[in-house]
Image 1 (cartoon, rainbow, N blue to C red):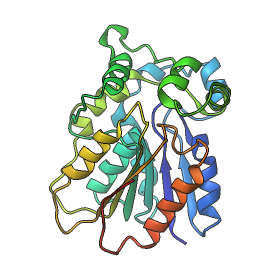
Image 2: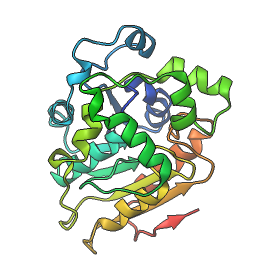
Image 3: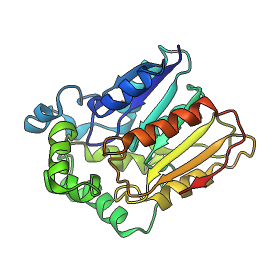
Length: 261
């Protein structure tokens, strides 16, 4: 039985993978859903009573915790969302995994995009004037930026069920040395997946990230789903995304084609 390790991103925890854990478990995979340090528990409780020290959490600490668990498993598949996608790229770069799926992934090596929503949201989170105050993911922010393809009622429900607050230092660190990947070295198969309406990580940045890998003998794929937000793993239609990932994983040794739909 092949192992899959799911890695969440900012403003969520392991609960965000509940549907995916069930989906891939039913298809014979041994699934591991990990929460970052200071992210364990029910999101509603984490929002009402943020863990002490949350604002001091750094990317290196998260990567170290995930790596510790990864090393207990013989080169698993990793599926990461957002910052979890960047962490999955870091793990693949260290040859600790057998293949990686990067969903709405934060890009390595200080890659930027001139999309206005990307600039605005990144600036709000990383604002140096806020110091180490945790970023409060309220219902309005979640609906407008994270789950913008949902109506207000559905977005509010998703916020209650899955959203958490987070450390501004995580995204700050993604833009520095902690977020560096050697894009020229051979690597395991990589699949980039994103949503066309993503306001956190625009599809154009994901495409840029995909094309930055230069080794011609290594497998890289890209899939852009229309009418999907940054909440692509949880919004209605997530099954289509999971099934695409499953199909790609099953046939990942075939010659890749970069697919944009």
